[in-house]
Image (cartoon, rainbow, N blue to C red; front, side, top):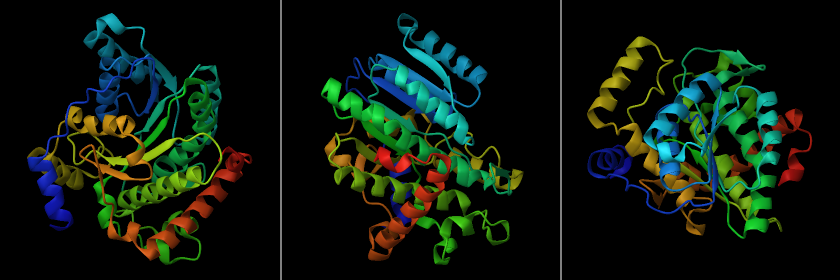
Length: 327
């Protein structure tokens, strides 16, 4: 049917199933869990019997409000949720969060849900904010969680999971920066920026990084960790809150017409961490393994994936010199 047809069919005629698989004894981390998809996913994890659900949030006050909401929904399970601070714009905050993971007896799954979309150029830590929040931050956190996930695999005889929330918008990313000699540097150059395409491009980069991470995990002799990447579809959340009023209005109308509720969309996030080995290195839509964009699966895409991996790893090594050893 093509991208538009597939999207409309999914949005209008497919309802992701309510997750039912048990999470008893498991510890799950969800970034961006104070609102929208992350909050609803946390509720599902609590309902499914998780031992601990960590709400990883930038603003802990808002995280505590989210925790209160979950506690009110499941009063018999008030002990389950914890609020931990992590700012995906701050490598130092991410490293501190990863250090805190060592206090956990186990870590079974992490859902990397935090993200943003803006059209104005803003810099944090000498990097454009969307690039930092959607790419560098999540990629750093994925790698820093690997030791605890692998430790859990050994001691608990389970297969831990990393699931990153991407977007069907990766199908339509123009990504003109891929023609540059240094892709990440081009993305971080204001005069070259196509900010209208930035969100879709960062989601495409997430897809490439997750695929390459899965490939490298397969090639290691260390305990296995499942890595997949999921799209929740178009959902009625505030992801577009930082856009200009006209774009915010047009996206609002679109979501009103075809958008899923945050709760329905969050079922796909659970689909990611409840999926098995068949999902490793795979794109998931509507809680099922699906095919990503044609670029991703092409020979040119494979070459682009390798380039992006090396460039991102170079950026991460400048933040955390021992990052390569974690693989």
